Amino acid sequence: MVKYWPNKQGIELNNALVKLFINTRKKLKYNLSNITNHYLYTDILNNVFKKYLLNLILQELEELILDILELDLSKNDVQHLNKFFLLDFINKLSKYLKNINKYYHATSYESNQLSSYKYNMCAFEEYEYTTTILLLYLLFGSSAVAKNIFIYNNYYVPYEHIQILFENFILQTSNFIINHLLNQFTSLTQMIFFFKQNDICNYSHISTRSIALFLNNLRWQNFLNKYIDAPKSAYNSSYKVWMISTNGIKNKYIYLHRMYILNRMTKTKISYLLCLEIIDIIIPRIEQFLITTIKYILYIIINLLSNIIILITRIMISYLKK
Image 1: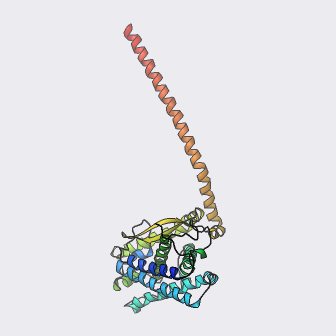
Image 2 (image 1 turned 90 degrees about the horizontal axis):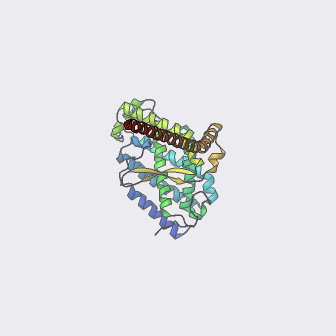
Image 3 (image 1 turned 180 degrees about the horizontal axis):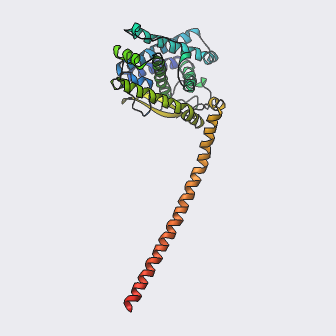
C-alpha cells in the first residue's frame, strides 16, 4: 500500500515530519560509502566523520524548520528567503569545520563565506531549487508545490518521494560543505596534514598522489556536468538524486521539470542541445540505411556465391559424364 505525504498543514504533517527525521537518522547507521561511478567531495571522509557530519546537518535542519515555523512565515516568504536560509545554513556548518581542527594554527584554513566557493554554480542553482521544493513539502504539505514539477498529483505524493528528496538534500549539503573546506587549502600538503591530524580521512585518499587524482577527477566531473550532463538532464526533465541504502550511497534519476534552466542557457549549451536533437534525428536514419544496405549486400553476395557454386557443380557433373 502506497503511503502519501500530507497535503496540508496540521498534526498529520507534523507527525510525518518527525517520522522522516527518525527514519533518516536510522539510515545514517548504514554503510555510507559511495557505491556509484560518480565522485562526491565527501568521498575523502571516513565513515565515522561522514556520519557525524550528516547527523549535524540533520540537527541544524531541524532547528531551521523550527525557526521558520516559529516566525510563522508564509509560502511566498520561504520561497523568497530560501537562498538566504541556504547560505546561512551552509556557512554555519562550514564554520564548524574550523572547530574540529586540533592543529588550526598549523594550517591556513579560513571560514570564508559561500560566495567564495569554487563550485559549479549550475549545481548550486539546482540544489537551491530542489531545496525550496523540499521546504514547501515539509512546512506546508504537498499541495503547496507547483503542479507539473514532478510526475505526481499534488494531493497524492508518495512518502518515499519526500524521503528521497530529504536524503538528497543532506547528502548534497555535505558535498558543498566539504567542497568549501577543500578550497581553503593552498597546497596538497596542508590538506593531507589537516585530514590526517584530525582523523577524518578515508584511507583510500591518504597519499598526495591519491588526493591529487581524486581532485582532478572531481574537476573533470564538474566540467562535464556543467556543460554536458546538466543541460541534457534539464532538457530531458531528469534530475540525479542521492540516496542512502543498506549497501551505501547510491543515485538515481527522477523526473523534475525545470524550465528556468532552459531559459537561461548559454549559446554553447543551446548548441549542444541542438546537436543532440540532430543526432537523435539523423542517427536512427543512418542506422536504418546501413542495416538495409548491409542486407542488400549480403543478399547479393549470397546469391552470387550460390550461382557460382551451382555453376561449378554443373561443370563438374558435365566433365564427369564425358
